[in-house]
Length: 157
Image (tube, rainbow, N blue to C red; front, side, top):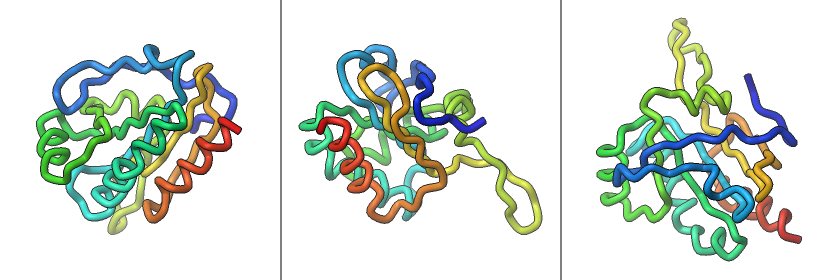
């Protein structure tokens, strides 16, 4: 089920690349939150998307916003990916796919006539009160980080 603008964002706790638990509820009431879901560490499109968000992280921070990238890769794979690509953005591991399902990004796709499930590249902007302000499903990674930054700036104006 797809989430809609205005709904309360599902909260969760997931481990990051250093196996430290990140609890989304800790940020509510304090910061805007950007969650971007991507299919897999190390693939060309995902690498570009994650490094774009990471490259603009300071600008997001100036907007009183934290960013989390989420995929089904495990913590070790996230750590290798982060270190290899010099990524500053926190990468969260949803190996069971429970958060992907909560946010409606675990979707069926037709591949060579077969139905397969995978993570649909999607981004959510959550305001300080914990409500979804933007639910962007099936996004194109090109220029996406800057578009999300523009939307976050609008929250503060």
